[in-house]
Length: 308
Image 1: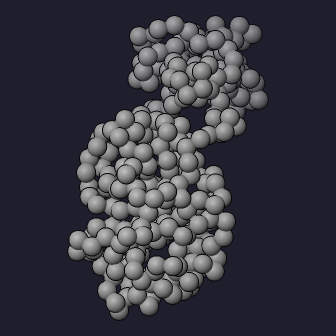
Image 2: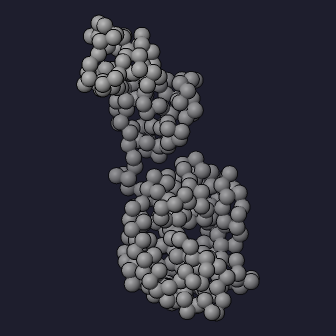
Image 3: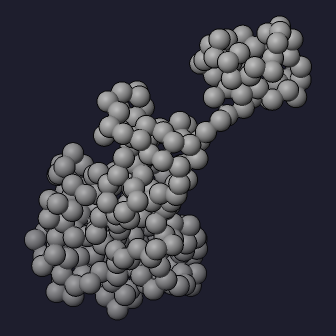
């Protein structure tokens, strides 16, 4: 039985790799537009390290009154849009949550909601997350089933695809919930096409560093990165890790330093001193970069000043 986890923490190459090394094969992450939701860059990082990705869509879903047919219709539309925005492959699953202790009185609302989801939910497969009671109530309505131990009182349905059995455990510095993967859960898979691997263009020879912090501070230089096109392996603190071998860590660089010459277009009220202060440089450096300026007090609007 494969091991999986779900979390509300955004993952990157480093954390996803650490969780993969901890023995997890699957991760479930949220679709949408909030602090806890997945974006396309995170999806690529997760798949790049070999984790299989499962999608969750949840707004509130923590009370019976939320579950109406009209809310289901709206959530179905929103889930499809969110999945397409992050590049989720067609035919994979999106799990909708019933995230409370739903008794018999709540079941009619829940069924109405999922009937509404079905009416606007296309391209993807329907997954449902909930307690043992919910799993029995929605059996036959969804393509995939994910049961939580919460509110299940020790019972586990025999037809489910995933079973969440432990909450709020910290692994590799990330707070997660643990899951057993009992059947293929409709994941994205992890293979990334060549076209999905981001590239980075180094426009000017720049320093190569061991860590993102070194690249940001310009210290502990280990060599140089020459002009050219590279695969983008990782990003952190505004720095980038570029490599010539796809999927293999390379060198950290400061992307600003790799851009080559930079310019400022003079506007009314500018002075060479103000421009130097704006870009964190010195008047002497600007004079050296712009030998055409004979009088530092004489610049004019629309003039192009090299600042790097």
